Figure 1: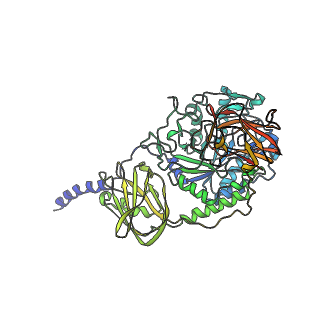
Figure 2: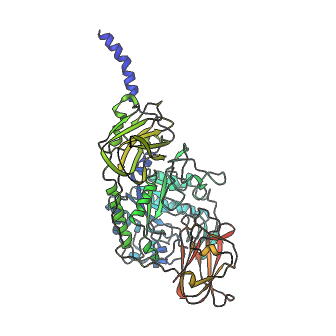
Figure 3: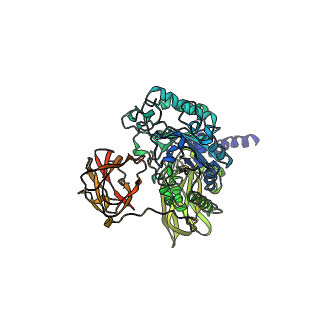
Length: 627
């Protein structure tokens, strides 16, 4: 008899164990460092260099280091404000394109050591690091590959110096969660007084994969490397803070010229969306400044993003499987403006209160199929706090249905779904239905679930019973189902900054023919003109102190102005130059660009001449004149 029982058990045991087997991983998988990054969800990037003191968006590399002397630098105030918003990390822009280093590097004299700050004995990267850790956040660094100050730029000597700088940052500032590298490389610069344009071969100059990024891997193995092409996280393709509605964590980077994609040389067409079944796990990071620009500009004090605007960005970044990277811009004195601080705190309160309680908690969930009928794969795992416990179906069931009986009438407007991404990004799409008036009705749909998917409904819904339909090419591995109601409360800046006052159409006449769409008050239209010295001319009927150029807003770049000269005249015949400059970062962040005249122009004519544009034309969505 015992032998019979043993024989029967020997047949049952393999079946039992088989039912406990987890689904096989699907596609490429995230690394351990990427898993930790997904869990962070959001962090901040701090731009603070001599460029701040020049009221520019990109420094030219010609600023005297002595202008960098903040009277009240307060890294703790900046870190505390970020922590109040729930951010999990801070990234110091240790060197931007102007070449000025915020730490006393051995590679160049153009650094904080040559400034008046702390009589040249300061180390601002270390101060940011200490403040970040004091407020329980992780620390990272940004090191611009482009250097508009260094006389060696464009030669092998600079590439070696750049790698020395990277080594210093990777070895002197504790454990880092990221090493951040953007794609801006080569162009006009000061270059030790030579004031010229230097073009490099971006595909080979930095030897990213062979020499540069291995430095990060050696010294900071858990640091996420950011660039256009990863290799750990990718640029989302815009600076609005939003991923595409469908945004896969997997992608196959594409180059424009058939060579291996590198920062600054990549086909950006699939950066917002990624690729279903892409060859690499490189999720998107959504970087966006808290103000219109990345650096502090006093004229933008009234344009600080509100808590509701930040929350919308959160939904479109973190809520689409990406991470949110918010740019903070300290004032020249060395701390954040009160409007920035207040908005951050209120945003943190909004996120905390919104996601404080899962309104689906305590629900009964019945699945059409459970893998091996095992508790380890049961739908109840969707309601715990573990991102990696999960519900799974049998291998041959790719479209299971889960019916969710809530504890009572529940009002919500946000649905959260997560996959156990340790097993890959498996789900193609989901459909959520509500039981209403005796029948099932579609409530929401979503694709590319991944690490985190937040579905924001158009209006709050009250329901007792929901149905979740899953669609995948393999057995799904869903780890989270949650319902939330967006928290909202009145918000107002304590001190409203004075906004610029536009000159109405009666205050000027447009002299240039064929450019009416440049002053029609509609940002969605744009004028397209030949690129010439004739430019665009205004006749003034009242005093004007500044001009705003809004580039085309249709997602295209043709004709955007990158360099300009502004002339004035009393008779529209004899002209003298008034202002000239560059419109930095306009391709990635096509916001209105302001040029101040200093002393208001009382009468006569103003001519805006594009000296350099993208492509062969001169386009403008809107020109605004300000009192």
